[in-house]
Amino acid sequence: MTAAPNLAQQRALAYSPKPFGALSLFASTYVIRHLVRHPDKTKRLYHRLIGHMNVSIVVRSIAILWGNWAVPEGTPNVAGAVGTVQTCTVQGFLNIWTTVTVASYYASLSLCSFVSVKHKFKEEEYKWIEKWIHAFCVGIPLAFSVWMAATENINPLGSACYAAAYPKGCRTDPEVSCERGSEQIDFALIIIAITQFIIFCIIPPCVMLALYAMLDKSKPEYQPAGGMMKIIEDARKRMLRDVLLQISLYLLAFWFTYIFNLIQFVVQKITGESPYNFWIFAN
Image (cartoon, rainbow, N blue to C red; front, side, top):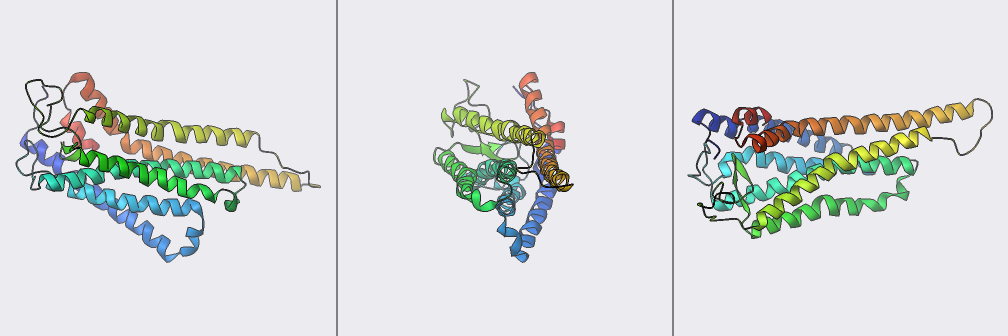
């Protein structure tokens, strides 16, 4: 059985995410304010998706700041827990919903870039996909989070609330019976893991490869006279390279955000112990 964190580790796990939650809240609020003050930018689908993504990040940041204060008072090994089952359910609902929503919007940015290049940046030819992007990024995670809350599968996990059974370890220890959380929790965690894998590791790299292929095959549709052909060809390739660079930077930033949590998860599964100090660093 995993050893419990000491008091110093409990406090660090509880409070270390809060400064980054505050920074994230400030940054996403600034982006939203900028888009509101410059409505001309929201004429482009790409910027509208960025706006919606940052609204989700605001909600996510609030949930992070709420953190341990939402965990039911008296929960073992959670410093500063002053909440109730209800506050834990609400916070966990927001955590699950926005975790998937923010990641989905990140993936949609690369998809939007690909579609815009494919249609030569004529948004009227592809703006119909916007409603389906929002349905996937917001609607499906929302329905999933409602189901998790309704089945009591949102409970304390670490220093916050997420998809988990309660008390901790009741799903693996036959001597401990679960007070909250059903057998569906295992299925739910698999769904979350598969969704995150597709969003992180499948969609953005596939879009990048497709754009690279388009860059290699980029040819003008007509043969202008003189040096115009080379000018048009160079301009198209330069635009494609800019889009590829933008997607690459988004993807690297996104992977960097989650790589430490992935390492922590792998180490825990291999050793059977929670690397609390590394977990603190990852937060």
